[in-house]
Image (cartoon, rainbow, N blue to C red):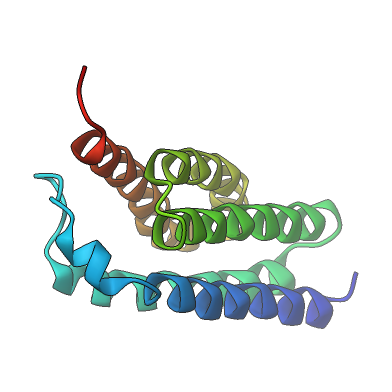
Length: 158
């Protein structure tokens, strides 16, 4: 697979991620604001910083993987990126459209797990890229815990 093709495909996957998540997150903002937030939820301003960083980092990482690695690394990168983005978009849809909060948490579990190969490949490219990728992996783990936190707060007790 050519390096340019890997870079272009990865960029398209991230663009779909940006557009899809933005669309679904904005679907029912009033409902979201009405929810009781888990105590460990970061302030709103953090979201406005971390997501542009994450999306930009994914694009930069894709092009660095395309440039510095080859073969199976390209295939694993694109497959893991596609599946992790699909799981993350499933979270956004489940959480914001039908408000299936618990199910959305499981979608984020899959997104977090499916991103581990990306982290490994990023470290293969360079330690600097691997460390630059860590905030995304950490953010997915935090988002997963928040989804389950929201589910616990909205699920009636026994």
